[in-house]
Length: 99
Image (cartoon, rainbow, N blue to C red; front, side):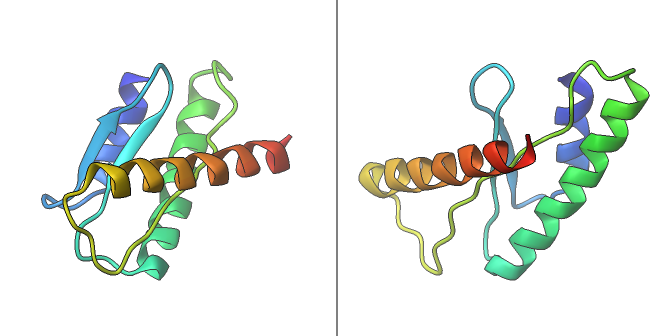
């Protein structure tokens, strides 16, 4: 997981953040970013993680992603929980479709 965290951190801007969220999950916070750019970054992350998985002799099978997007964000716990839940639903959908 350390190599994955390092790879994700290298692929974001200084204004963004990678946060470990559970055992093998990460939250990536993008600031001032369009949904199209987020989708593009997810594909870059997927390629990098698949590359790491291949070099680590299949210790894991790659990565699945979920995301949540808002044009305007405000510091609000209720909104943050809703966004995390939304991303979680998309993550499980991605997991189900990658099997």
